[in-house]
Image 1 (cartoon, rainbow, N blue to C red):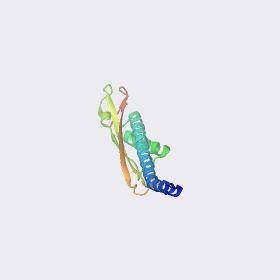
Image 2 (tube, one colour):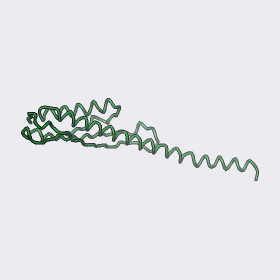
Image 3 (cartoon, rainbow, N blue to C red):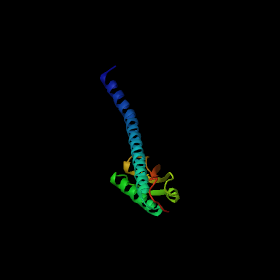
Image 4 (spheres, one colour):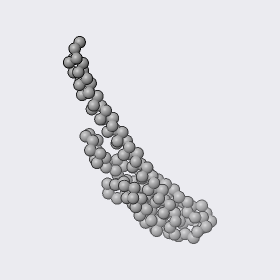
Length: 143
């Protein structure tokens, strides 16, 4: 066997292996992007729940949760397609002081995968996270 035959085999191996390696790298990048987005949405949900639990009224809690989630996502560099949807359960504010109560928030963010510039991988992914924070048991509260 001469040297030319060996070189052609190496080129053929390179042609076959390179796209597979690039595909695996692309899958790792997409997985990392989705994992990053999950973490950031969870942190935003916790920040929103904490902000809502500090509020004095249920109406103020819902507004504070929305603002906290948006600011948290913006500060951490996660761009949602449109504004994030923040749902706040403020039922705990109707309970009288002295009773255990909590606020639950749910943050939903639609993340675009188009910015990755990988052929065949694009579109969006909906990411949702929830968090609960206790309301001060002995503080006065109102709906």
